[in-house]
Image (cartoon, rainbow, N blue to C red; front, side):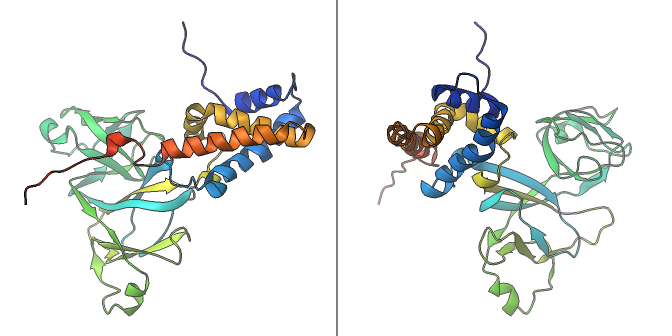
Length: 301
């Protein structure tokens, strides 16, 4: 038996409307369900039921830093931070080519296969910039490195890269530390980040400000964070994961909201079931709710 087809925005809204006895939803009805009700469901999860920090909203971004630039923007879908690291590596160069899951390092590169396997390669500039992949294979003769996962955008000739050799944790500090610091123009490897205003206000400072003073070499920021459910594209990859994970809840939400419009007598019970589904989803998806995450350490005193 073939695997079932993964749910999509269209299939979920169509099924929700069919449950409301709209056998053949019109284009206008589907548009309303997708543009209005699905966003209302996201709002219900995130705001009304406190589902902003769910396991499946954890994501990351990679960003090549600019020498001398201290202030950076948060990702457009940012809600709150998990961790931040500055990646460094002495081996940085200009690629000869790239493919779906490969990058061809500079012809003069002397790194060996044994040294490369398991290392992360960050694309720091040019085509495919701000991506990272782990090296799973390397040919010293052709200089072709195979990486996993595959690139979202293939690097190409003249893309710059860095082979990561160190990971440096960056700790959060209040922004007033920057204002009262006598060394707020200190340059070097950043060790602190300072959100401007609230964590989700959109920008942050790094201290010391990034500075390598080496031609063609940069630091790279690796940031893990919770994505803001309200900012996710309804047709995007992460939402596709949530459709698969919570299919019945999305369908029930569209069904319940359609009844509020077209059959108010049945709406209260449908809304009750919908709310119960959201509570169940959140209780299971909050980080740490799975008892397998628990660790017990026994010590002698």
